[in-house]
Amino acid sequence: MADVLSQAQIDALLNSVRGGEKDLEKTSNEPEKKYLKYDFSSPRKFTKDRIKMLNGIFDNYSRVIGSRLNARLRANCEITVESVEEQRYFEFSNALAEGDVLALADVNVKESEQEQQVLFYVETNTALSMMDRLMGGEGAVDDTVDSDYSYTELELRLYEDLLRDIISVLGTSWENYIPIRFSYDRTDVNPTLNQLLGVDETVVIVDMKLQFTNLSGRMSICLPGEILMSIFTEISRENPVRKAAAEDKSEEIFDGLRDSSLEIIAELGEAQLSLSDIYHLNVGDVIDLGYSKESPVYLEIGGCHWFTGRMGTHKKNMAVKIDEVCYQAEQRSE
Image (cartoon, rainbow, N blue to C red; front, side):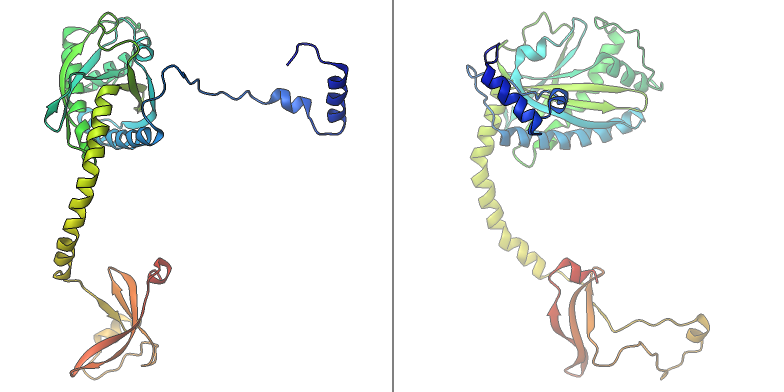
């Protein structure tokens, strides 16, 4: 649009304001929409479906490590996945300070060792608070800790012990897709000087929020693109095999179910009696259930009404003839 409006444009704008078609005050107060920048020179490698899959995997992982940290630190820790984004490695490395520490984990996909490693980062304040709890403290937070804080030898050992435990259970979150084993390798105390990955290499960054009673921190996991591409390739290759295996076992599963026993309760009716009446009951006494003999009988399985039927006999035995099947959940809960 030109910097100077023509007279026709000014008249059109004034007419729209007078007619109520445009509200200048409302327009000026509306926040400007923000859009993610897309680099067409380096297109995305991973589709939205892949990112969504990773989101689900690490959402499950957050619950696993949350329960482990609750037990080890004797504190309530809530872990949530804040974002799963595809980025360039320099976007991850530029956010690190000189004193930050990274844990490197080896990745073994179907007994095949990957050349690159997964990077784990925990904020310094969060890591120090967790170490304090490991040593029996209450997780005191020191707000005076600088960004270039250097861990002591003891703190590095505790950091290694924490991350080794966190990394060891990451493979369980992938079990529904493919067998993967993650194992702790080493700690890098100065990642800004060491070039662990190529600057422009594609990575996926998983940001997780750690919420304690006295502290809110962050943990980030950097997954190299090459490792993810090999994992997704194996998953795509195994999907037909997994489906075929599931189909082959369906008959075996049903055979096992056919031989299993299931308790079915036929409810004739309900009655309320006082304790004294029950005490004086004798053989031959009649209890009024409030239903006629033609009333339907409910058959319960697992506490829910699954069938309705009528009382009768079969080969001189009491029996129930099924009249209706309650397919819908609303019918079963009545």
